[in-house]
Structure formats: structure tokens, C-alpha cells
Image (cartoon, rainbow, N blue to C red; front, side, top):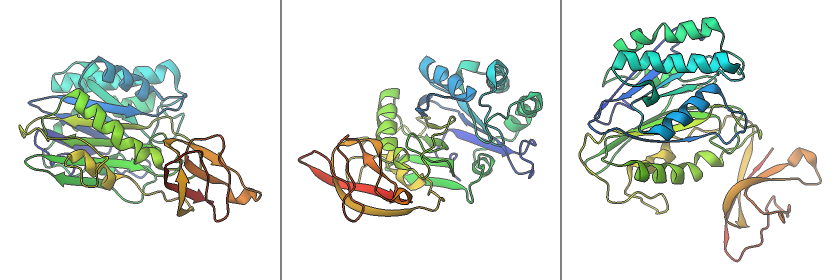
Length: 321
């Protein structure tokens, strides 16, 4: 089990024909409580898909009760029609589980530009069947969010009386800013929004935001954290800046996807504070590198290292194509 391992969650994954392969392509995760707290981070791309625009609004309004995800189509650059599809999707889920549409997050992944009437009908029309398939022992949801991924990406971690589960998709077109992925993380820990938001942003800043293979940023990235409070246990601390953090959120590191692109990775000494990546160019254009530090004074040195103006040297990841 993955996102249903923590108490208080059900999930499902079914095939509705969005993928030509006939594989599962529609997933739903619902928080049955007793607490409903949530946090989410989104792509920083200025071009954002309709599900991102909707989910940002939902995240701003309050805690989410459920999240529906589809693969086989990104519903991006589909205009007002595409946004209406997202809204109708949320309304269909809300009607089936007895919630408000403003409590339903929506995620899509797949080819940009996909989102016509057929796309809409396959999603909205199959929501009742998706809800009927919900189970607290489900293992089908992770497969329903895959696109070009070669394997399902899941993680489970048990703390002192609480549990965390996660599923993710992510492959190709990777760049810092969540790295082309959809991620759903669930926990039965008793936590409020501020603790969840702080932990999630800290975790993604040191994991998902550090992946890069081709410099292209996705329009649909979203990482969502849901807490049911069903364990009744509140972790003592939430931190990823310790070697052995006591928080369940630490297992985010174990569910991050591995880039499949043909890149080589080496570790070198670099100074500077963590920030947005800087594109570094050498005399040989074929060996362009990316360094996950931000300073305008960055230069290429012998061995593919980079230099920064800082008194505190840190390890910096250099990826050479």
C-alpha cells in the first residue's frame, strides 16, 4: 500500500480510455479524516495548466478533502474550455463524496494541448465509477498517474505512532521547479496547515527542486500533502535539516524520482547559498553544465567545478551533458 497506508485515506485508479494503451489513467485520493489539513506547492513556470490554476485557488481557500489526477492529457493551453473541464471534474467528485468543489484538488499530466470534449467526457463521466472503486487497501492509484515513467514510484514510512505514504510520477522534461511531477503524500499525523506547509516547502526545496536534465520546466507540476490526523499523534518536530529528522516528511527523499535522461553527475566543492540553478557554459558547448547555486560570478574551473563568492563552501551538484 502507498497513500492508503496511513489511517483515514482511500484511493482508487481506473482506466477510462485517456491512454491508448488501455492502462489506468484516472486516480482519486480522499481524506476521510477525522482531521482534514493540506498543503501544496506548484510549478513556478509562468505558463500554468488549467488544473494548476484551479488547485491554486482551492489551496488558498482552505484544506482539501480529495485530489483527482489523470494521466494521458495535460489540459494545458486549452483555454476557457479546459478550465471549465477542471471545474466540472471537481464538481463531479464533490457531488459523489458529499463535499464542496472548492475542496477538490485537480491534477493532470500528459501531452500539452490535450483537453477536448472527448477528454472531458471520459474524466467527468467516469467519476462515479472511480468513487465506487475507492478502497483503504488500494494499490492501483500509483499506476494511474504514470506517463513515460518506467516504474511506479511509491514510499511508505512509519514513525512513532504515525505513518506517511506517497506516490509520484516524474520522467522527462526535468528542471528545477518540481521537476515535471505529480506527487501525493498522505499522513495520519495530527498536524495543522502551517506545520504541513513548512515541512513540505522545506522538503521540496532540497529534493524535487534540485532535479534537472534538459532545462525545460513543466506547466503541470504539483506536490500535495494531506493529513488526516487519524493516528491522534503529533510529531515532536518537523525538519529536514537534520541528519535523522524525526518527521515523517523526511521520507519525501525516498520517493523522489530518478531522472532517466542521459546525464552524468559529479559532486564538486562549491560555495554559496541554495537558490535557483545557474546555467554555466564552458569553452566546449557540448559540456554545458548546471549548478544548483545562484551567483552571477559563477565560472567553470578545472574538473567541472564552480566558484562562488562565499565564506562557507558547500557541496554543489554539477550535471554535465
